[in-house]
Length: 110
Image (tube, rainbow, N blue to C red):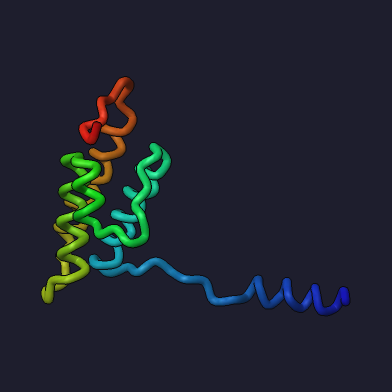
């Protein structure tokens, strides 16, 4: 039994790990996911059936609007996002994080 447990642990250690997608499309998706994680910590969770645009309608923050537009283009546009789009998404995430850190921030969704 100990041998099986040891083998299981060894296999788990060497299982392929999912690596981040280094493309602009993958980076924008990852930045949007980080924004969702930040908002979830504030109690604003995107439901599994909810589209990015529907989530934005419930949480109308300017930085989230910019990220939503960029992730929709990354997901659905025929042309791949540019490195400038990644920079815009990075900036939008930083703005969103700053908005969420503001003491006494009023929730525009209320």
